[in-house]
Length: 483
Image (cartoon, rainbow, N blue to C red; front, side):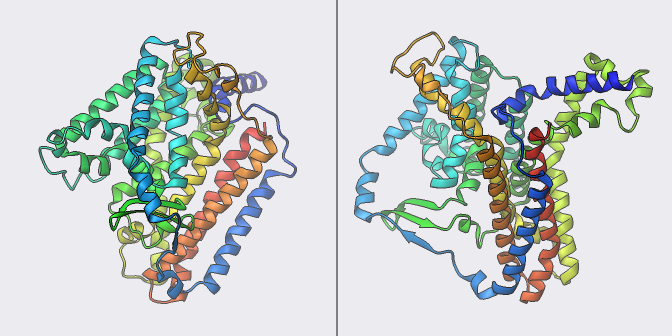
């Protein structure tokens, strides 16, 4: 009986996770050159060492210095570049792509891999645009397709009432949750994705009519908020109107987060959902997560059903999906209370008069590098395996067998890097992101606490939190390689 149940468990685990597993890897077997726990312990040790170095050699004077940047490009050349209507060309291009995505979803082939709209929106836009923001800054502010569509309607975009302060970033949080729910549980096809894009356009149109474009695209529009957060970590910054002249500058990655404070706790929840939704997406593919429900470790379901839950799969499947949805929606708040607890521990150690809420707003941005590297490590292979196929889909956007630009076949060839290279890059990215977070948190601590000793003492609980995040992140990444 036990052996049969185990076999059914393994079969169903593979059935439930097969689609997602293919989405995050190339399916190529890879054996780690050493046990994955050695990678985890090594990364933890490196993180602790970086904290020790900062505690001894980084002081308040250094933490209070403004972030350095280095102008690049001649201002007149940049201004000329800015006035050759390149912006209009790019705006037209992005509107064309979104228009084509909607139309192809309605009249094109409903095979997700042959229709332009699935690859364009989920891979090229939702993933690729995030990584563009991480390198080139807040380009989306100028090329937001919904802003571009509505901007000619000057009177319409003025709004009918002031944006309520109590709303803050909560609309963006709600839309972000809906977006991830659609991604993970929506089972979207080209047709339903086009409907979702039209619905999202209507939401933005009504919100702009009500609150005005400036307020809505700052607080409410999902991608504006997300890409703006990511852009703060970019090494390239472009300002088209700096003292009347365009300015392009370089800075150290993540330095844009220095001397920054979160505006509102709703933005902290948004940031934490960036982190928790990615971690959750990886966790739900693991055997541990599957067993949490289907093997009934607490013996809750079996007495109610009269049989093992695995034998009631058809009946329990909707309940399992509801269980997953609830866990996803709760995930940012679990992370929030975990974050607040470690801040409270640091406050108690230092006897600081700053409230936990104030500390959370001051230290919230220190978690952003972790959210970014988690996102990259989990999804960047999709850009290589599926995202590059958009070159071929441009030649045949409707999946009708066209070859408009001669790339319908050659343009669908993916890049398949070695799995060892992928794993090592993921380890390094996780480590770099956590070290950056330790640095940002320590710099903020030096500005928030009266002495270097108290600043270092306050960061001991935060260091523990970073170590936990590092270990859990690498453990989740290693699970597909352990099967």
